[in-house]
Image (cartoon, rainbow, N blue to C red):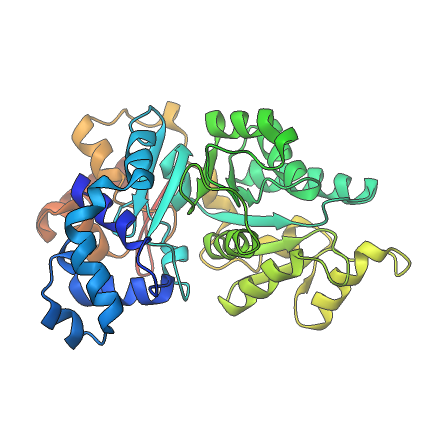
Length: 366
């Protein structure tokens, strides 16, 4: 997306009275943030906006470039390995886009392609038992080995163990942070965060220098649930914040899995409660894999670049238009900006080389 559009999206965050849901509706109505900020007062009023918001939009359209937060964010993204992902980016997670109030902008450090890989959220207590740690390590290692990206919140306890287990297994992990990415919370996860940035991905919807707040962690949990095909709860007390992530996953229509434990373990209460509410009782990774939509374990790790012919630059760029889950032909045409005939020819070539497979409803990247 153009540099100016990113500036306008950042400016939209500064408008008082415009929350995430309203912002998303406005972007859909006007096509993009640039059009929104350059719309006339009459057009803004016709869109249902009240005078105080209209006044801010009109004033911000000329003054936002002077904003220190926006200037700082644009300076932040100029460093290598840092990216700003907007809603119309090919790397914007399709599952997150389906949620009620998807972020219009994501700040990331690491490999943006991980955003469109099949993910499983793994969450739980900040003070887990030894058994909980063991469960986390074994489940995440096996799931990462199957090709699932392990997504969690970089918190102490289960979150941190999930990230480490995925990395130790040679897999991929995404940490969704409840602070801006210039800050690491908790501080003792600084080294882990650095490793994730190098081998996986750090994600936040907050400006790089923003501190945590009361709302930032529920918002983080909503992104974790929205990114993932399902959420695995390893251990949770009856009133644990972990249950917020599970509830948000359920509300988004995603699978929720819970590992049972002793009735005498306080950290099993939350899991047992979830199971009563319809979460799947989970004893092995098979209980997870068989429930995940559009996920075939035999397909996830078949991408073997050493056995596949190398791609030229043009084909490699085209391949980025295809997700690791079913991507419709229309979507590929839109992303690639090629004709239908050119797209089908390229897809056939990639399919013959083993880079994509033809599936019901579209194509899947290998």
